[in-house]
Image (cartoon, rainbow, N blue to C red; front, side, top):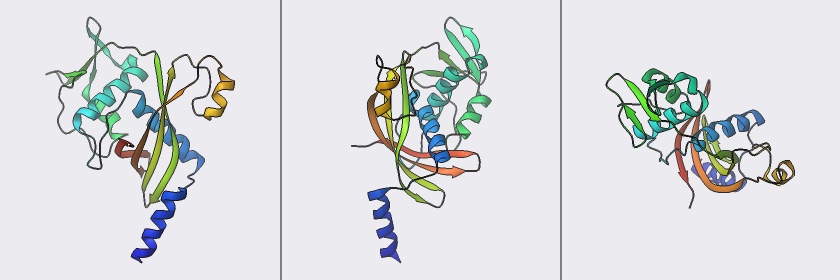
Length: 197
């Protein structure tokens, strides 16, 4: 039995799993959310609190700026409950200890504060391959790309099509990540996320 399992894993590593179109689309969006705020790498032991806080506050600021309150000159704050809820949709464990990070402050009122920021760069991800799938866990290879935010093409189409969609701005390969996710009833949660050598 052990030999059969090892052989199956080897086949997965060589040829990958196809995965449904719905899963691939969901995973593309999921990992784009991670990459667009430059989420730090983490191993199988999971992301630390600082990684979760940085990810959630920055993503919320980019996608839902209306949820922030002005807290000073170029400083905006958001309640911790909103950040905790967002973390629960991406990671397997919650934030254990709210705290300051290099980019985010945690106030005594229980709110997270961040300086106003803008980015002229569009960073996104595409699933290159589902390497293996076992029970509810998937091992993935993820390509990360970047380009000017004014790119007019479809970031989830193929690199071969990007030149035909926008001849002036063409996304370029940034890095390759290997990740493990677990499937939940309402989506995926990331277990590990690291760049390949």
